[in-house]
Amino acid sequence: MANIASVMKDEISRLSRKEIKSEVSTLRKASSQYRSDIAALKRRVATLEQQLSRVLKSSTVKSDAEVPAEAKSKQRFTAKGFKSLRSRLGLSAESAGVLIGVAPQTIYNWEAGKSSPRESQLERIVHLRGMGKRDVAAVLNRQAN
Image (cartoon, rainbow, N blue to C red; front, top):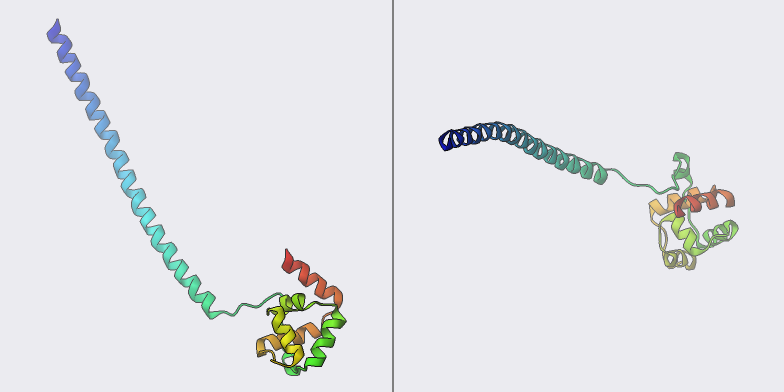
């Protein structure tokens, strides 16, 4: 009787090893396929990130104060005029700096005549001239959020 029991036990072990081997080989194939898919996706992401960085470097970023095309023709700057513009709109140096994209100290230097704005900053100042107090408040609220 022991002989039949050991033969049965050996046969069951053999069949279970065979079944396990077939299941494991299927899983190995799937795992290998997943690894190659992941590697391909990583390469694609790297390529897309490179393209994105190239596009970002080539494009210019503008703030919320978009400058219309007709504003470029009347670009002029005087320290006294800028100071009166800032007081007319009720802007602090800090909020004017936020709108134009400069530090508050830069605003003070412009008003004192120690320095003058760059062309890109001058375009934003020209656009600021066409805005009212409500428009300025709305832009500042959008930037605060």
